[in-house]
Length: 450
Image (cartoon, rainbow, N blue to C red; front, side, top):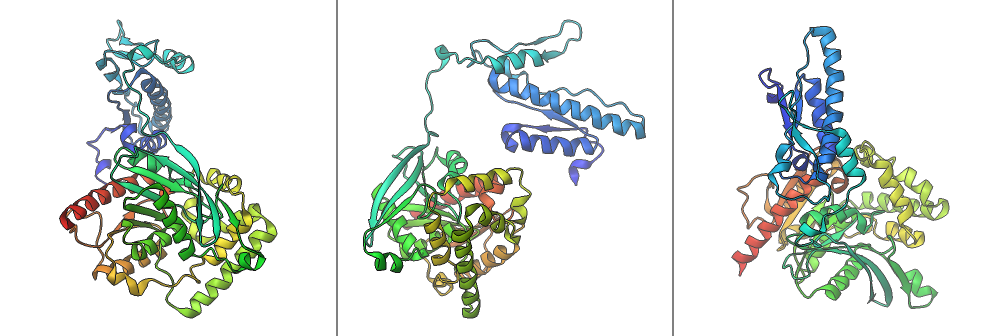
């Protein structure tokens, strides 16, 4: 690897660029293990932000000192001091804190220094200096509400999360997977909300979304919550929210809905992002087996409850990568506390089984809606499905990493590194970048079509 070259003595890390403190620590650990310093760098940070950076830099230095000590036992060398790039604080005339952070030149050493004690004091007693705030940004404010809709004799009360200005031309609808909720998308929605109106919904059976059957008992038993029915519900919700065309972003079960809508609701959908999704199963024998498996799972969910079901569900091979994620337990806990309607959750599992959904493979070569197909690097099964989808649509695999991709190509595939099936939870930053590029391509596609 080129960064292990002996001529490189330090790795400069900007936490705001690499994705936060956890990623910064991982990069610093790698640098230390290869005998290199990890230098923290900040640009135009407030005193509040730099106070946190000062704590982080101290923590990294302590780790580096320990690694250097262990290495010195073998090499006899002395580890150099680390000088972090945190002095940009004084580039700003004013600060958001009423009490400024103290960064000054040490009269004895001549070094510009910051005090851990001063940084800690600022963090503990932080007060906003309202006199210097000209405008407050509310674009990332999450607006949550319940939207009642009636579809084919069933009344739904759909939980909706919305971020971004309602005047945006780009409107994104986010659909979660089975056991997910609209909350899964909040971080990604905030990241793209400056250029788009972002809306996520809790699908039937999930979260606080409620279903009221208006007919008799026989009507209730006949009512299905299939992919096709749920797509009708989503379409009705979209029509209540906006008369404009939208881009649908779906993950797993939500991806199957997004793909179905891209094929069947072309008057409403101008683009679709299919994350870890599939057009269905071709083989009828395999479909029959999958129906039986999902029916058994649904019965287990009703009989044994959500807690036991979650343990079994996330023990599957599909979630090998997710189980290694540092927030895996937090994710499972949120699933345990989010769903109020276990009966309809089980009904969705059975009715929306990929073994029951009519396969869409034969429709792909006629698609008129641009697709972005996203898969995780470690998700071998869905990587193969994604490649086959691109071949079925355009005759070859089109990589979204290629900046020369033709805007008229209907399908592009992006592989996200260091993650498995749950791309949006395991490694959201590259997904956000891919989503931004796709939205730009959609804008160019619409302009060329007009």
